[in-house]
Image (cartoon, rainbow, N blue to C red; front, top):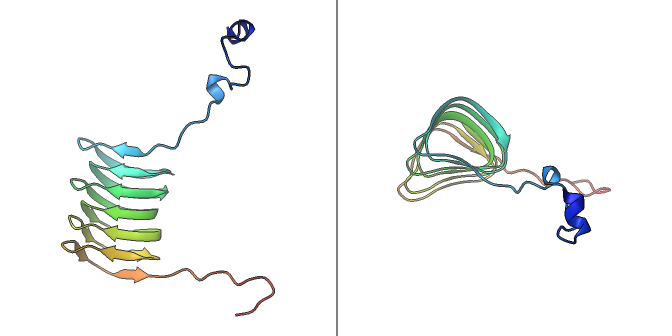
Length: 139
């Protein structure tokens, strides 16, 4: 069919077949009426608006919405909390607790911030990554 459309000049000759079209990066959203238990792994951004219990390992950013409840160990690039989180957090770049956010647990990250009004109970470990030495130079 595509060949016939190209013959009549109705289809782009350079367009990839539909099965080869690139998929855009879109955020995964766990809606407000959803409750999940288990292990969540993946890539890309995640917005949690519902409830989750278990472990989250994400190669991307996670945002916990204001009405969300997360009882999990979370590992991600960046973690932003506006809801309630109980668990150990590990972020490559930053953990941020917004004014409506509440965290009970341990944080290990390169950067940490808590807004006025946020609740934080636990240990905070801020470990800045050291830049790699230039080749041929010793520190």
